Amino acid sequence: MSAREPARVLALWCPDWPAVAAAAATDLPATEPVAVVSANRVVACSATARAAGVRRGLRRREAQARCPELFVLQSDPSRDARLFEPVVETVDATAPGVEVLRPGLVVLAARGVVRWFGSEEAAAERLVDEVAALGVECQVGVADELSTAVFAARRGTLVPSGRGSEFLAPLPISELAVEPSLAAPEREELVDLLRRLGLRTIGAFAALSPGDVASRFGTDAVAAHRTARGHPERPPSGRALPPDLTVEQRCDPPLERVDTAAFAGRALAELLHVRLAAAGVACTRLLVAARTGNGEELARTWRCAEPLTPDGTADRVRWQLDGWLTGRSRDRPTAGIEVLRLEPVEVVSAGALQPGLWGGVGDEDERARRALVRVQGLLGGEAVLVGVLSGGRSPAERITLVPVGDEQIPASDPEAPWPGRLPPPAPAMVLTAPPPITLLDDAGAEVAVTERGLLSAAPAHLRWGSRGWPVVGWAGPWPVDEYWWDPAQARAVARLQVLLDGSRALLVIHTADGWKVEGVYD
Image 1 (tube, rainbow, N blue to C red):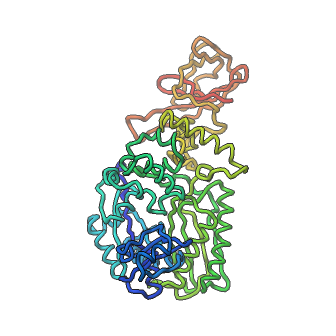
Image 2 (spheres, one colour):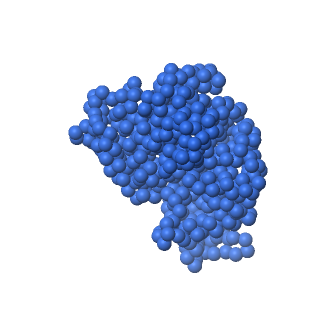
Image 3 (cartoon, rainbow, N blue to C red):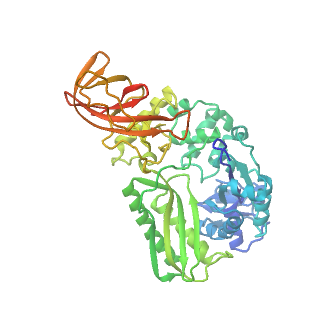
């Protein structure tokens, strides 16, 4: 796959999974009308119930009036996760690298499975057949972006590369709020507002300019707009994982019951979030791993649309442990769990995604963010940028500018060695267009850098345009061969820190064109 070719995503969706799991748990035939309710409203129903007029959001009494023979069961996320675990294991055995968005929906990188089976069509058919062998109906979708792949799976469609926005355009605007694992809780309100504004399809919403969306709606609307245009809502995080985030607990006696396992999982989730808060990050992909007394290794990755809270983490740990310990999995452990481990796979900046609370820390940051989003809406999405510490040798390379509201991902790893990097402190101001200067020695001759990387003479005077200053101190030079792997950009440079009379300090760089000012120290 070339660097420019998008990384395709495969999504596998089991329709009406809460209703399917509820029916299976009570040994009801698949043909019976079943509805799952929470807070007295229908949250899922079977195809038979839907054919009789039952819909999500209906009150329980109205649903029973439309379908008198309806079986009504209470929502139970633990049950859904427990019964979904065999499906996940089957998919993982066929195509490793599965990530669970929620019970009933998984995603994975399409590249490996497509290479193994020869084509996306063959891979989709094989996965459907494997899951059907468990007696579970499923649909597969493939697209360039995760959200588009999920929408495609709900229609059993393989979206050609680069055609994601065309596929999404005719879909009703309500589709943006259908999948809870991809939408923020306030997405329903946004969809209702867009519908009242006359935007009936995703394509109509995508036709709005990003600036208009950012200035008139909230942060979730910006994410929904990126989804509508076929853009990634949250690209894979390039942020390096801070050390010591993984938490582990040794269980003595081993965990064999779900209630004791859930208690241990909640305590471990609280410890994990203490470490995440100390590091200033939030977790968006979590690995739940366990080791049994017989040495069996169990692991499952959960991906979330929003950063995980302690309760959200504890719920996913409980669901996963329930699936392992009491599910119908063919890989059900043969002994109790002795070691339980939670490992963040992907983290993002906690401050960028968590708004300040009422009267708490973060109010000022939140007001400033809203102001920046407003300016961004007036001037355009790329008009307001913030700097992110990146990796590199020069000060300019160590700054990655990203639009406000986007994930603050550096262009390169700032923790890498970067031989030849300028030593601290870094200049307070980095000049994007370095102006030329002249460095002179005591005799008035120009100072140069020799082939050995040394100065030809001690600098005594700096001339910048029509002005000049005596040089009272200097450090360096630091020579480095930049872009030596690319003949078109390769160059030999040397950087020098210069202290001028009047306590002004500059970072200057010597290239084949002479000396230039690269930065100014505060």
